[in-house]
Length: 419
Ligand SMILES: *Cc1c(COP(=O)(O)O)cnc(C)c1O
Image (cartoon, rainbow, N blue to C red):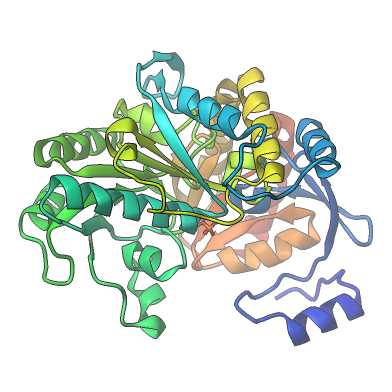
């Protein structure tokens, strides 16, 4: 541990005393941010390779989003979903367009599909996934004799509510909080036979299956990508069995992986897609989009959210989505993401670099990931670790090649020093 800290004593004391201790905090108080740079309370700048945990898609405080929020803040915040408000339909329409893009396996845009998506607005990724599970169960009720089981992948992460925890294929998250809700099972990623068998012979805890739920690149589990052939096999299996294919794009969506959504690189079209992190440049919002065949089964009263789709959130989301599209973010992410991968691959003690676009994981052969995060701060770097030997990178998508080089030069020096 380094003894680096720039947190004012009163800020630290109040937080440590009164905020529930579910997070270990790093010793910095951030007060401002712009693009891919964070500034602390002493005026020090940091290059941000975490991006508000993948949320600051357009970069911190992007002027278009700031302007949209300021304008909306003076007009209207919250009336509830009984009424029409500006931007809600526009955002849903923008999402339908973005979800319908077609790309090649490298993520380059090649056209669009004639698919309509209908969106329910929530406030977080977990809530979006709760909505997806309810949509799938409604599908099971109507189309599959009441089947309700959801099969997900080991090492997945779908959220912290009880149902999304049950869908999360990592036992360590379940342990303290049993019993988990029934109706869930998980199998190894990239093993289509294991998935087929879980669907055809469901465990008693899972029950008859109505849906498969996957991330195309597992984020919190350590940046583990699903193969394109595997994803195509999964889509075929779901079609064969009439199951809902739910793709969790909470972390991978909004050009994080180069294409607008990561499933597009595999050339598949899911039935239900969940979104959150990058959707509104860091303003809290979640969304679940569904194709009309399942969306049409939901009736008034089947689902709801008090804050979901409030006027501030949809204003921020509209500005974010319009700007991401106007700035051709996909091509930038593909180019800079490739550069980040090359820089990481060339570092000592990095044995593997996984992920796509600007979602990358570096596997280390020495258990120094936590120390790199701690010491990175003193060097003006915000890094993130998963366990003791994986570094995860989720920088704002606007990060430049030069900023990547500056950050990677510092990281390389740190690895040499600590390993
Ligand atoms: C972060 C994340 C979630 C949970 O989102 P919250 O907004 O924290 O509820 C769900 N799925 C994936 C893939 C995520 O990365």
